Image 1: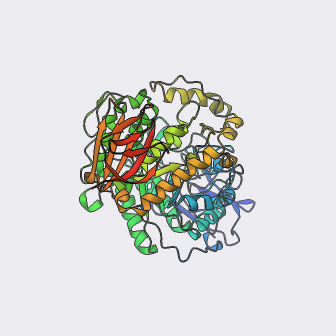
Image 2: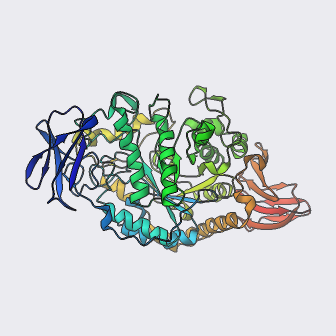
Length: 570
C-alpha cells in the first residue's frame, strides 16, 4: 500500500499506521510518499507533521470512527457493480427529486432509501439529487458542514452504502446527482490547515473561510477539488454533481475553477461513455454560468434558478417579505416563465442595487426550477412547507414550464413534516451558538425568528418524512396530481420544449390569473380565492385540478385556486 500526502511546508512527515510511525520521503511540489506493504483495505492510519498529529488524511476515502478519528484504507475495486448496462441520463427533459438521506426515511440510511425507490419510479422522476454526504461532526447535519470530502458519512452507510444506493437507482432507471460543497468546509473536524495553504485567510462567505483557488500553492488546492469531483463520477458511478454556492468561490485566474472542472468532466464523460452533468447553485444571474466553454462560458450543464422559485412562491403563497418583495406582482411570474430570470440587469430592492444579465438564447432545460427545496423550506424558522392548495397550483405551473423541474422529498404528497435546520456539533461553543448564528444569517428577511434549537435531536427527528401520510386520502390525491402532471409532461412534447421564446403569457395581476401558452396547449391558473371566467374557448381538457372547472360557450370558468391544462378549440 502506497501512502501519499501533500504537505508543502512540513519538514518531516510520518504515517501513523499499524501501531507505529513510518517516515515518508519528500518529493516534488510538496508531496510526501512511502510504501507500507502490509497495509490493506480497512487499515487505520493518520499523518504526523513535524511531530504534530496524527491527523486524518485530507483525501481520506473512509472515516469509520468519525471526523476526529483515523482514516481507513478503502479499495474501490472491492465493490462489485451490477449497473453494467447503465448508459446514463441526459438532463434535457428530466425531472429531478432532491432528498436528504438522514430524513428521507425513519432509518436515515442509504439501505432504507433503496426501499423507497419504487415510489420514485412510479412518480416517474429521472434523477435523485442527494444532499451532501461527506462526514460531518456528530450524528446529524444537513451536510454543508462536511469535512474529509473524499469520504462518505458512516451514519448513512459509508462508501459501500452510497455505491449500493447508486447501483439500485441505476437498475431502476434513475440517475443520481450528488450535492458537493467546494466553497468552504465545516468549522469542526477540519484539519486541512496543518497540511498546506488550502484557505485564503479571509471570510469568503457567511459560512466560513474562503478556499485558496488563486493564491500561492493553489494549483494543488484546485486539484484537490477537481479530483474529488472526478472520484464521485468515476468511482461511485454518479451521473452528475450539484455544486453548492459557486458565487462564493473566489477565483481570479484566467481559467475559472468551474471551467477547468467542466473540461475535466467532459473528458471523463467521453471515457465512461455516458453523460455527466454539472449543476451550479449561483446567485449571480449570469448566463455565462451555463454557456459552453467554446462560447466563452463556464461550461455548467445547468444552474439552479431561484428567480423562478421566488415568483412561484409569491404567486401561490401571497408572501411579499424579504427577497419575495420584488416578485409580489404576478407580472414577475410572467417574466420568469418567458425570460428565465426576473433580475436581468434591473434593480433588486432586496439587494438595493441592479443585478443580473439577460438569459437570451439560453434554453430552459439549463435552468433547474423548483417550488420547494432544502433551502427554501429549511431557511424558514419553522421549516414549514407550502399547503396543499398552493402545491397544486405551483406544481401545475412548474411541471408545465420550459425549465428542468425539481421536487423536494415529500412535496409530491404534501408532507406535513417540516424540514428544519439541524446540526450536532461536538464543541459546546458551536452547539450553543448555532441558533444565534442562524438567526443572524437571515436578519432582514422579514421573519419573526422563533426556530427550534438546531442542536436538539428532536429538531432532527421532526424533520423525518412520515410515509404513513400516504394512507390518507388528501395526500394520496395530491400524489396522483403530481404523477399525472409528470406523465403529461413526458407525453406531450410541448410541455418539455425548453425554448423560452416559444412561451407566451397572458395575465391579469388585478384579477390574479395567468394563462401560459405552450405550443398548442394552454395552462390556465386562477390564484384568487374567487372563481373567474376567462374568454377561452376550450376544445379538450387534458388535466384539471378541480372538478368544478367548466368549459362553456361563455368561456372557461375556474373556481378559486384552480388550474386546467387544455387544448383550445379551433
